[in-house]
Amino acid sequence: MTTRWKFLLIGGLVLIVLAAAIYFPILRRRVKRAARLQQQSEEQARRELAQPIAINPGDPRVKTKLFWASDTIDSTLVPVTVELPLSNNPVLRSKQVLNTLLAGPVDAELRTLPPDALLLAFYLLPDGTAIADFSEALATSIPSGIVSEQLAVDSITRTLEANVPQVQRLKILIHGQEVETLAGHLDLTGTFAINKKPTPSSPDKPATPAGGKTSGTLAQPDRKP
Amino acid sequence: MLLQVRNILRIRSLSLLGLLSAALLAALMLSPSQTPSETQQSAPAAPPSPPTAAAPSPQGGVAGTVASPFGSQAQQNGLNLVVLDPAHGGTDPGARGTGGIRESEIVLDFAIQVRRALELQGFQVVQTRQGNENPSFDDRSATANAQRGAVFVTLHISSTGLPGTARVYVNSQMAPVADSNGLIPWDRAQAPFLGLSRTFGDLVQGFLAQRFKGSPETAETASVRQLRTTAAPAIAVELSSVTIEDRAELDRMAPGVADAIARGAAAFRPSYVVPNSPGALP
Image (cartoon, rainbow over all chains, first blue to last red; front, side, top):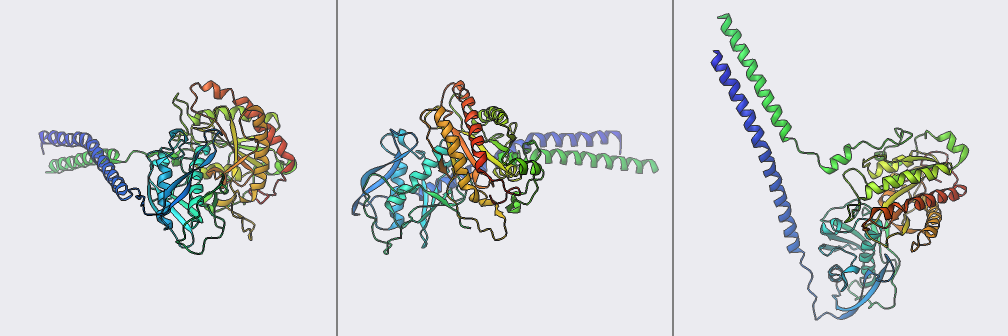
């Protein structure tokens, strides 16, 4: 092979390398964009599936205690009693009270949960273990810190405790996954104990309308040995 | 003829070299950029002083089987070691304020002052990080679990709460440890120490309440992930908050916080009977 061919070959190789250098970053961007679009569409699909449970006006209206932040005492929760038509089914009932809790109080300053957070799914196992699956916004939009994360979880557990006696403990998932912490502090690997009193015999029995000024104890994580 | 064969060999070598370089370049460009979690994993663990090479592995599932470099001294003097944990770091800035305040930076600065105050009280201090690294929760716990007779203090700044106040947290109630083999399960390492943590936390919170009006009088409970795997009396101290415009307001809290932690640790010293081996049941 002559020198001319050698130069042609080397030139060709250099061109291939240059083309690769230009093309591969573009390819990588496209792959990333495609992955992002796929993730968004999955999230969108979940949102569509997780439309808030409509309140049925035919359901009995009961006094419902919802726990939001206090406007007088720093970093504490206070119960706010509202009358809502709630289902007798504990799963539907849980979804209704949690969606109302997520909707937030009149004063946005007293919110404990991010306004863009959604309840994606709620399950109740026969042993009283509830599983609440929230959208990623619960973890990403919540102010980081022990106090704010604790208030968020306590508002969920205490609201369930006050209104759904069938729920004994709660496991919180984010977008269908178990996560180590809510936003860097609060441990979500275990379950939170809720109603420590005996469960009512009939699972369909409606919860007694909440009365009084305070509710039960703070939710404690329950880690089985 | 011989010349032609040599030429062919040379050209083949050149072609091979060219293809190899192209493949190498392509492989380099296709390799995915480092994700935050990978960064966290690969970030070097803070070199505590003394080194924690002897720390038991979190994957080992148990704590309390490795001799402490401070073993003999701790046995002689009781509680003399505080493991300080400036939270977050590296790719995790923690809470962020509108004024650009980053929790990970402030707690590291606070740790310097807390360390000085503790040393003045006669404590040795080990930090879980000394720079902008982000050791995992388990790595931070391992730093404490490898020591005998240590207490653990993790420092935080919140995003919310009344500015200028400070709260101490101890871990929430946990199921008792079934210690038939004398070892503590890693994921519930804090369980046997909850009572001691409460005593230590109440002492520190009492001193903080004297310095910072509006702070609670006693320690609160929360399921703080960092505390769960720590086999020692352990507390989280969280100051409020990063929402202030001027960082100097937080900086002014540092001496008071450092003093409260040091005095709390000193007051706690008599009530802590140091276990015989690192991470052993108290």
